[in-house]
Amino acid sequence: MSSEQIEGRNAVMEAFRAGRGVDKLFILDGCQDGPVRSIAREARKHDTIINYVSKERLDQLSETGAHQGVIAQVAAFEYAEVEDILNKAREKGEPPFIFVLDNIEDPHNLGAIIRTANLAGAHGVIIPKRRAAGLSATVVKTSAGAINYTPVAKVTNVAKTIEELKEQGIWFVCADMGGEVMYRLNLTGPIGLVIGNEGEGVSRLVREKCDYIASIPMKGDIDSLNASVAAGVLAYEIVRQRIQSVK
Image (cartoon, rainbow, N blue to C red; front, side):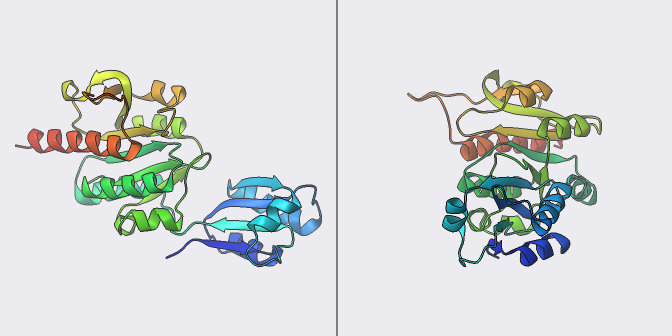
């Protein structure tokens, strides 16, 4: 399934009405006629990111040359709800294991993390709506099919979502160089693994919501791992501890 760009006022409005997962909406700056206002209202109702851009930018983005001042970028794959992830854990009779991604921007990293999440037995992945990669064709391809089995939910506020999940008994560990070495932490039970942005790591607000901060031992000459590699290392320490805890 490939990502899709929808252009033209009627086509974009129909995409919203049909419940398509519109990741981003581009509107001609200054265009405020009735149909465009209706589209913007629909986008806000779905909490879709709206970008007001110049005619030059829209023309550059357009694949058809007939955008009518409106272009929508539609997700290549359908998003799940957070509750779908929790239900998957219940169906398997397992304590929830969730990946929470704080502004991962590289679609290759996102696809690789979804693949790792599936292989590590995680029940789903949570990503933010803003300043992060969505489920593009690149993500779908890089996940190597894992996207078909691992639900991905998109949320407005990662920190708030963590708070809500903590109320349901899930605790959270985030990856950060300043934390406790991961081997010394108890990573069993219902758990959310938080992985931060490629450059800045986990944001301060999200880090403050986490119960534990885990560091990965570094023995080389550089001091950081690629986000998807860090996710894999920590995920498999969780897997190791889960296996040991049921022996």
